[in-house]
Image (cartoon, rainbow over all chains, first blue to last red; front, side, top):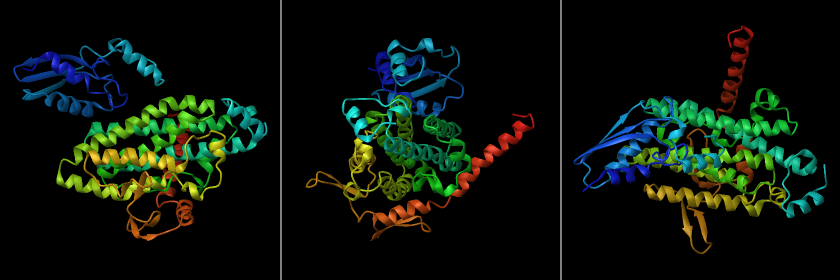
Length: 103
Length: 312
């Protein structure tokens, strides 16, 4: 049976296309709601002009949709609560620093 | 300036070059040449992408391409900025030099005809840039460039992933797969050209001696082929090369180099040419070079006019 933990694990595999760090570690997931085999995922982005919104949504649908017993993945793009850099994990922040991106 | 011998001895002990005082005349000359090729390539590369925005299917995917253009301009800026640090007149290079004197590869002077070609540009040719600049990043003895390339290396990876992600989606339909194969058929061979003359035709490389790069042209070409073929295999698209266990390397399925038909925009695989012919094609550059350089300069003139009028 599919669990929320499994959905989170699938989301961990989705990387931000511009900086290959997990979207979970970057703090882009606002929440998930699992009902039976259907899951709704709330995702936000680092800015309204994010260059990879379609790409990330497609990757979320592919990664979570690949889980057994998931029949539908609904992705909601939300802007509340807004993303701030404090939502990133320390590891994600350190990785960005190594690429010369101040975070 | 110091002598080549003195510099080579210091480099052998791990010396990092920081200023012109640390360089020999030959080192400075080769560094300027390499940086100019890099800066011109990054700058002129944006125009075929800009033109191909018309083929990108969604608004957000267009913004992805704009982010790539912004990166490429940033990379060009880094290389021109380093040239300025070396006393080169970069305003002349960008705004006054004759279009024919830009040093970008031939492919950058062409136009792309569909979205499959744009994605293939990213998946294959940005990968070539990633290999070439990755080599500089890991091996260069010029400290300021090495430090600046940290960000460039990460961003070129994004461009390659954009191409790969788009192509993976496109090959899911028969029509899309056909377009991707057609794009790879001509663009893969353009990728081979990126790495320049084969090692056996080159004289001893001062670039290697000075550690301005770490790998030979053939080593980088092989590394690129391994990576590119690996990706193309994963989406069942054919590359015009195969692995040869005897030579322990990738070899082409046709006599390389061969003739490029500018009008028909395809390779004549049954017409081998010499590397002198290839270099001749590079020197005469591609059909849209003049147009691209004119767009660049028109942009500056418009901006200056607006600024003069107090608008910008």
